[in-house]
Structure formats: C-alpha cells, structure tokens
Amino acid sequence: MKTILLIILSLYQQDRGINDFKLRAGDLIFQEDCASGTDNTIKAVTAGIGDYRFTHVGIVYIDDNDSVYVIEATRPKVAKTPLDDYLYPGGKGGYPKSVVGRLKEEYIHCIPAALNEGLTLVGKDYDDGFILGNDKYYCSELIYDILLRANNHIPVFPLNTMTFKSPDTDEITEGWKEYFGKYNLPIPEGEPGINPGAMSRSDVIDIVHYY
Image (cartoon, rainbow, N blue to C red):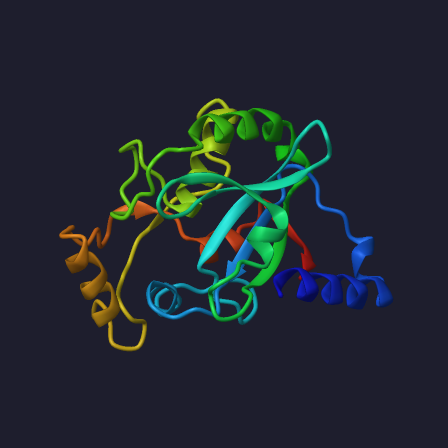
C-alpha cells in the first residue's frame, strides 16, 4: 500500500514540476509531525519558521552510488535512514510536513567533515534527557554537534536556553512533566540546548524547499 501511495505521489509531483528540486548533501530536513504524544509536547514549547512547529530535523547524506539518506537522531539510536522512509514513514497516522534548509555559502566547507562525523555516530543512543555532552544525541543536538566539530569547534548554530514551559502559562507543561517522569529524568529547564524550530529560524541557513 505504501509503495502505491509513493508512486501516486511521485506522479503528482512530476505533473507539477515539483521534482525539479534536488537535494544536496548537507541539506537539513525539518519536520512537523502529524503524530500525537511527545511530538505535540514539543510543539507546545517551540516555534519554527512561519507557522511551523518542527519536532525533528536530520541532515542529508548522499553516498557514492547517489543513494540519498538522512542521518538522524531518533529513538532508539542515531540512524542513517533512506530518504523515502524519512519523508514518508509508515505507521504514524499521516506523513510529516518536511521543509529543507540549506547552509549558506560560508558554511558549505563544513559539510563533508560534518557528514563523516555523523556517520561515526550512527548507532549511538538517543538522548531522552536532552543533555549536551553525554555521548547520546537528540535530533538537533546531533546536527549542532557534527557541525561544531567540522568547524574547528566554532558553533555554526547558536545554542539557546532550553525551556519546557508553555508560552501561555509560563509553567512547565503537563506533557513534559509526564515525559521526564516516564524516563525518571530531571527537567533540564534553563540548560543550554537547541531545538529544530530555533535551528530553522537561524540566519545561517536558507529555506529552499517545501515537501
């Protein structure tokens, strides 16, 4: 069934010239998931470009055979995911909205080394506690970290002060209380970090495509 849907989608795109866009190695694909649970918890405290509330981000890797993958930090481990599986995952109750960001010219030199760093991290555990420097990775932390290493430890994306509070109430949301309680972890309110929404708004990238 998924294969049939992908074929229909491909024909639809071809008919409208959508496939004229071509991903490049190092492109970032931001996603706003249609699923519930943790994704909606993230949406409650983050804001991306426009009206998007991104819940995920990965970086495009193209191998020597021109096969396209996305290196992503996702549960349970950092993975190298085929592009179609990343854009059109099964079993989530609807495909996520995907938006492509491209590093500006002055940062293009970082991409080869960043992708090599990303490949070495495939298989590392997902970071449920959103803590920097613990050899585990959440999605935007992975992108931040591999670009940091590739740029002689000069940040490409700035870190932010993390908050898990609702902008409406200035209180930590019930969803986040439940999330950190489930994993028996402290809430890292006020700690340094980065989320996909903040990354999408950064002036180091241009938004170049909407799927």
